[in-house]
Length: 448
Image (cartoon, rainbow, N blue to C red; front, side):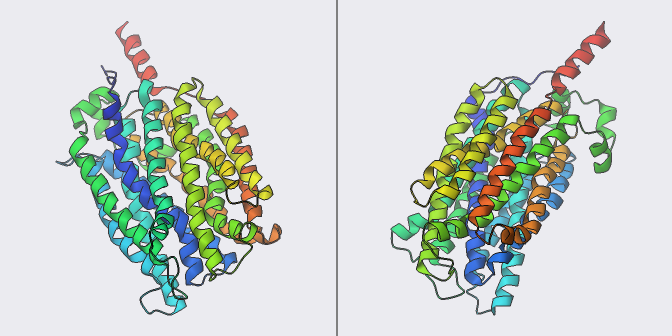
């Protein structure tokens, strides 16, 4: 007979996700600065979206493998944590290399190739380090507390984003150079990556000190896994065929949401450089100032997400708060078309933060409640496809769509708002189910 996982204290839930803070600093530095790095090296604006194909492509390959492998792993370090330490180690090395792509005396073409390969390894390692935290909540938290646990994870995620986004402008303010020779990345960006790598190391150490994973027998007891079931191996295609309906309906919502945010990460820098600073020259001081301001706006988004992550658990209806959050984000994106003041854009990005908070918490809360524990990691790895595929599609189409909006990158932000509105409508198709409740009912039925 399976047992219901006991409630955990706030601080135990906090410890489960704290390492996400360091991982998200790395992800935020990548999100806010990849376009800036490649544009500074010499990439054409119409080609920028293609550089964004690689990160989700690596995610769709790596995360299912990590999920499936960790479901079958148990050693002295645990089930999920070994993959955290491997991913973090690679990420730290690459974070020290990527911003120097233009500083090794290479030709523009060679620097692009070096940066592209470094980006591939960075996103692979970030995905490997990020996935264990999503799995740990699914593994160790009961259904009643999962909403709170993923909201804590969302809070820490956005706190890490805040640090990563603000790092370049903060370093600039204390005297670190925000300009560099043509083709090279400013020191304000390079040193930000170094600091992010150091924080990531500390967060990984914290996780290993304070997280205790369930040994296999305890895990099986709490997840209702029988011995013969634990020996049965199921392939990923078989699991996809038998995935709960919730997996696919949330995946549809995810498609529109993650396409929208891919366009935000790709085009915000160029959009505000043109609408607020009045420049499209990627080598100008104004463009680099706009690049710093992107970090501020993304930090404002993170603040909005942190605040909204506290509000989300107050809603009893997951679908209502999910759809509402996406609508608020859509208003934020569309409003950028009408705003030419850098400070007024705070309003837009606060609202965008509401959508981001919901995207980090609600899909995983709803999905993990519908899953049994046996293949939790594999399913969460496969579910990452609903994050990666839309980004790949959006990145591949970005260069085609941009001319259709007159070549103005702010038009891509308006498109992002429209995509979020469609996602909000699709939330209505989601039906929540609870695997833990089903298992309990089955046990009761068999005992009668």
